[in-house]
Amino acid sequence: DRHSILVVEDDEVLLNLVSEVLATAGFYVCAARNRNEINTEINHRFPDLMLLDVTLPDADGFQILERIRGNPKIAKLPVIMMTGRSDVADVARGLALSADGYVTKPFKISALVQAVNTVLGIA
Image (cartoon, rainbow, N blue to C red; front, side, top):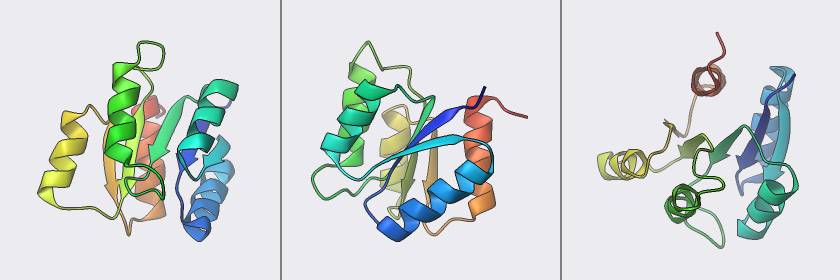
């Protein structure tokens, strides 16, 4: 049974690259580029993990993570922040909001896949 991953990223090129790599690694991948698409995907088919960009056109990824953690129905959803915001304060904020991981752009694709596998408990 394949794990499903919701990739939240507004950069079309990066979204396609990450989606393709994860699909090749055996995951079922769905994508969202904004808040509305995130809601649609979570309500349609609840993912096993979310890769969440911090900077979206209509939302802040930290606020989205805060809302997820505050919603009892989806609070346990594993979330890995995937962002260009690499300041210590940003990383600390993501982890304080209970992100399961924090991957900074630019990242090695292998490191991203490893982070996903680790959070999902895949050897």
